[in-house]
Image (cartoon, rainbow, N blue to C red; front, top):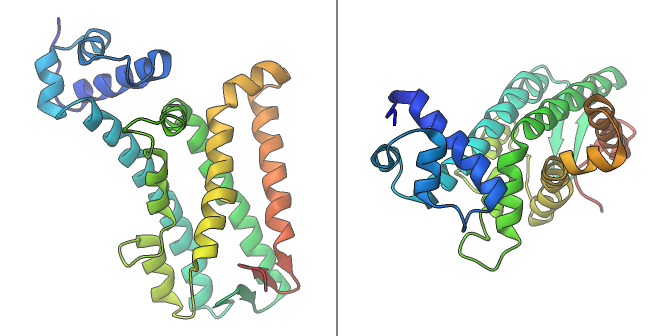
Length: 236
C-alpha cells in the first residue's frame, strides 16, 4: 500500500471516511476500512487522527469553519460597511434601512449570500448527511449536528456575533433568535443538502431546477420578513 504524505494523504483519508460513513454508517465503519479505501497504511491514519471520532470531528469543524468564513465575508462586506456609511441601523428587534435603495441592496446581497451557503451545503452534502444520520441515533455521536449551534450561539466566542456587535452595539441576539436561526435557517439548508440526491431522483428535477427552486422559496421567506424600511428580527 502507498502511504502518501502531507495534505494529499490526509485528504484521501477524509474522502474515504466520508464515503464509508455515508454507505455503511459511522458505527459500522472500521479504521481498517478507511485505510483500505484511502490506500494508506493504518498507522498513517493514527498519525493524523487520534481515532475514528477525531475524523468525524474534523469533518464537522471543517464544515463549520468554512461556513463561518462565508458568513463573515458577507458581514464585513455588506453589514459592517452599510453600518459605517449610515445606511443600516441595527435595532434590538429589526434592521432599519435609511431608504428603499439601501434595503433592496441588502436583500439582494443577502439572497446572493444564501445562494453561496446553499451551494456549499450541496457540495458538502455527503458530510451533512452523515451528521443528520448520526443525530437521529441514540448513540454517543447524536449531538454532532448540534455542533452547528456554535454557528448561531449568543456568546462572546462567536466571531459572527462579535463582528456585528462591534459595528453596532444595539445588536442583540436573543434565545428566540438563536432558535429561529437554527431551526428555520440552518436546519432547512441541512435537510435540503441531506435529502438532495433522493429528492432529485423522485422529483426528476435536474440539479439546476432543484437548486433554483429551493432558492426561490428561500427568497420568499426572506421577503416575508420585510416591513416598510425594516427587516424584522423577531416578532413583537
